[in-house]
Amino acid sequence: MIGSSVLKFNRQLLKSRIEGLAPPCRFLFALCIAERLFPLYQLYCARAIQDRLVTGTQVLERVRYLESTRIQLWQMTHEDKEGRAEPFLNDYQSLIPAGDLVPASEVDANPFSALAEFAILALHSACECRRTGDSECAVWAAESGGYAAVDYIAHSIEGMSYDSPEAESAILKKDYVQAELKRQRRDIKELATITKRGSPISYVSREFRVRALIEGLRLKGIVAWLLRS
Image 1 (cartoon, helix red, strand yellow):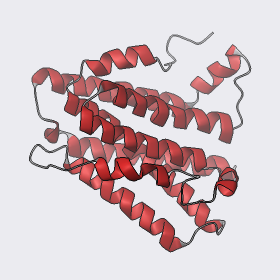
Image 2 (cartoon, rainbow, N blue to C red; image 1 turned 180 degrees about the vertical axis):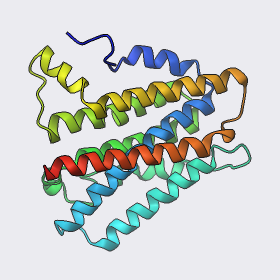
Image 3 (cartoon, rainbow, N blue to C red; image 1 turned 60 degrees about the vertical axis):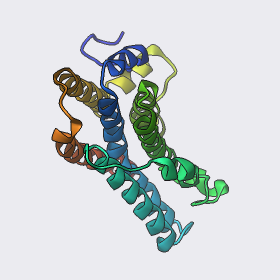
Image 4 (tube, rainbow, N blue to C red; image 1 turned 90 degrees about the horizontal axis):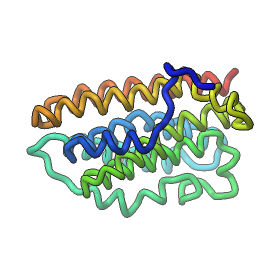
């Protein structure tokens, strides 16, 4: 039995809360998740270079492209900054492991492949959310990006099992799993206040970005430590 103080991923509740946010706030929510996951993509690239599957030049091109996309999206959180997400939406599949960065036969050898995919999917969801304002895009970022990443860390990197309710409860109780669920709830709560006040997200976007970046680096450190253990 999972204790009442342990958060669980509740898609229906999450969607209901996100639907109550203004479209720009939905976009900022998804973008924060993508920002937190970007350091995991960097781990994937570093291992790909270490294993000599790609050259440093190839990786640098991808990372620079992703950095440019992220910067442009954060600029879009300011009312006077316009931009288009379509270029990344057209290109994102080539950045996913088993795209054109690393041969498909080598993907499984990289322990960060799935985490890199979650990072790209979260960024894709943020782009779609910016383009459409659809709440489902923000939900997808949370579910198939943020939550999927920490669940994968527990199951595939720590080797934890789903075989019983007790095993599932143990995964949920992991500090980094609870941390991500708490971050999602926190962001939604703060963005709900912004929606209620009718304030532009430009007032808080820098604070949100810095916080997400710090949290992403913290998660990167946890993953790197687990693989060394």
